[in-house]
Image 1 (cartoon, rainbow, N blue to C red):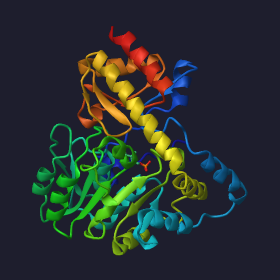
Image 2: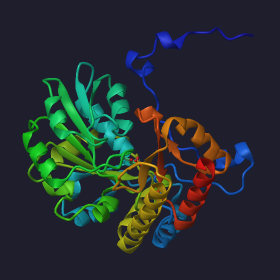
Image 3: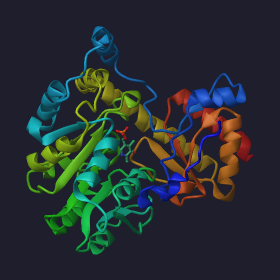
Image 4: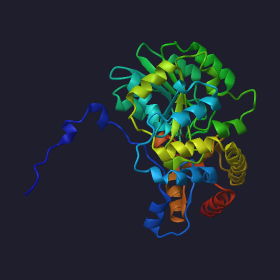
Length: 373
Ligand SMILES: *Cc1c(COP(=O)(O)O)cnc(C)c1O
């Protein structure tokens, strides 16, 4: 019997049809399957080349007996530890299934059809998707030298603006807006508009940015109730597979976010792992140090090859390889190197390279040199 076919596209919420889904880095196992390659180097998803803390592994092992039980929906212990770490109250922190979930929840709480959500050109791909999912209009503000132009962001605010998303450092460009620029900006945003400051790379940024230019968004929460700061355990803490991130803000707004999240949005392994990871700042410091050295390794190689790059304060860097970027990406894949094309960000000539271990970086550099010469 043949099934009756229905064209569900006619029944779809109109804003859903227009969404271009997030394009993730290719998993190592996929490339191995496709090309029968043994050694593959993945420098595509800004993951931590050192892996994660040993204490994280132990904490997960210790939880294996508890798999049949639902997790603590309130993430009590993790929130308490973060509250101490950030010098905030537990009620000012929401935990998410990756910070990605929390970024989307902000849109769900505050915006809908007819509203506007503002973000920057070359901003993180999750922001326009978050706007589209709730039927809000995404307003993309032109960037300046690949970085956020905060004066232009201010100028883009209208009566319909509900949320502004800013990443500092920004992904994929690795650019940073400094403390003075930020202070001028946040003081001018109307106090009823939500500003989401995405600090996914703050641990790395701290190692690159001069002390008087660097700032920590959580220091501004007491002055600005409309500010939300998001962070993740996926990058410097090395827990990308577990999906855990957090958002800090005023009690009222964090309460709304908790109101709309799933009751058990963060699994138990993620909770204990994040707690252990937070408690091992030695591992974070070592990761940041290795990244600093790895970034120098990459930028020196680019300079040797005569390639322009966008200076980055993250654990990744965009290098300009010109018109043949798509082809070069394919050639890199053929030789077992996964990097991230950023044509979907409107940066067709660039490839984004995550900083790997020294050995991984060397492997990539050798393959790149071979392909360019
Ligand atoms: C990687 C990244 C995140 C973190 O995503 P998770 O969902 O926490 O893994 C958030 N924002 C930006 C800009 C990122 O690059």
